Image (cartoon, rainbow, N blue to C red; front, side, top):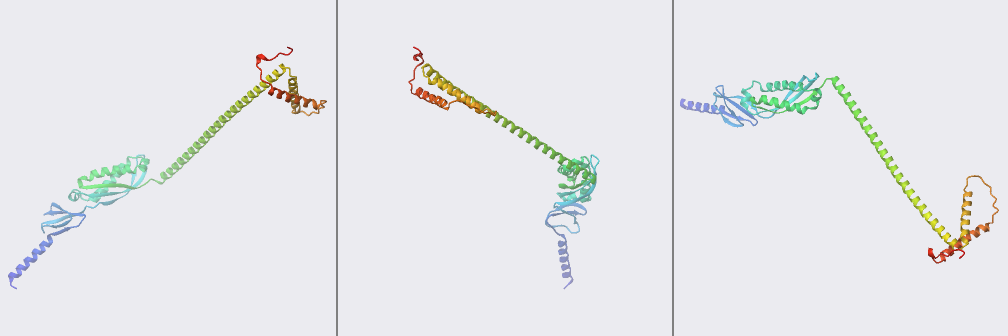
Length: 317
């Protein structure tokens, strides 16, 4: 092989090496910044690219995936002078690789310090009770502040979450006593409400019972009055019939009144609560005869034709 052939072969080998050095493959999820003679020129997206060897070089390899950054625990003084410890986590994503590379020196350290300082500012402006009950509000405020500060760096803060808030032990014990007292207070209120409701229901029941009892007495009184009225009407009718019989000259009517009074007197005497011994020199046949006279009188009255009041004959006419 002559010298010319060796020279050509060497040139081919050099060209192949140069082309191989200029070939660049960017993996998925990353972007490469390219510097030409030390000056940023472009950003390479995932895929195959050709650069000029010895002139162009990769400035930085930036991950475009969302990343997580732990915020270490730190002490914070709240608005009401309570000392608490808090930590958190930051989710961020690089949107512009050139800005993230050339606008800030250390992107991770910058985000971390920015989050920690704003965490103290936001939590320090709140009371302890607000701090423990409004974590969503704290996360929202931190996200707005830190995201606005990182926009010039080409970084998007997607979420900031407070992981843990640890108050001092004495405050935790005081809060536990307060919670216990509050629960006992609610229990006492519920007991009082239950007793009050029971008393109301009992009073309502007694009221309804009294109303029903009064209505029952009124109904009974009404029915007693109606019974007495009917009894009086029957008595008046019987008296009228006996009076008509006496006016017609029937002697059995007088026996009816005598027998009625006789029986009533004996009944009253027998119902007397006093101890008694009675000698009755009365003939039982007289009483039976009087009762028989009453029966005959009633039969005659029922069989007699009705006579108007104007045609009743007078005795002794």
